[in-house]
Length: 316
Image (cartoon, rainbow, N blue to C red; front, top):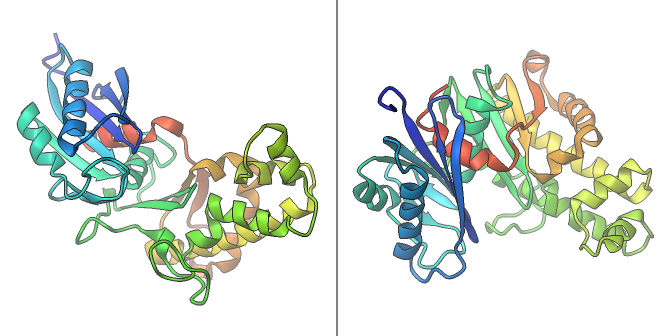
């Protein structure tokens, strides 16, 4: 019954959960599973859980491949996760080898930002573009690049770390060890930190909104307060957008994309973000690049990792 159809499982691996879904050749989800990783004690145990989930979700269907999105540093050419998650013993884990041998199918492994970029390119807001830059503004800044219809990996599969491009050489120290990285100025964390700093000497609706919901201050409250006309929030948003635009202008000049897709929690600010971001980015763009690209919100939301991982086998 399924002989003429190709089925792929996408895996979205996180520090606290594993999500798996079975996809048909059109990219439609046929079934899904989710499992917590809190009890896992070894890397082999985590991998075995993924193998069991794949077998369960694909039962009865001929599987042609498994795509896996993992946080942290990933050697995609060898299918090895080098490090970067909260999982046990998660250093130099040969996922492609272990899972491929157990399942008898090809396994492709990419960094989660690259998976998201490819998912948006194949099935989301990047469809029908030729060259796309995907940027997610959340706790940090993640990015993935598609050039001439191919996912850009680079020599060691680490291409696209736009969040760690340096925009202020004498700026604050980043977790990576350098100073003045883009994500220190334009991430959701940076927006929150900027708001907290400004609120030390001024009252703001930002704190009131967070307190009313029993939440700590986040970029979500900043954009909401700005929408209400709060001056502190407006100042924070203006600063953040200016730095976001600097980084995007650098990406335009470097990659010459026809589309920039913006994801992550900050992108949910919608019309509080995008008109200003487009205008500010344009101010930094050299004339030959003007009018050659669009800046649009991502489409795929929470399933982007699953969709992108599976799409490694469903080319655009």
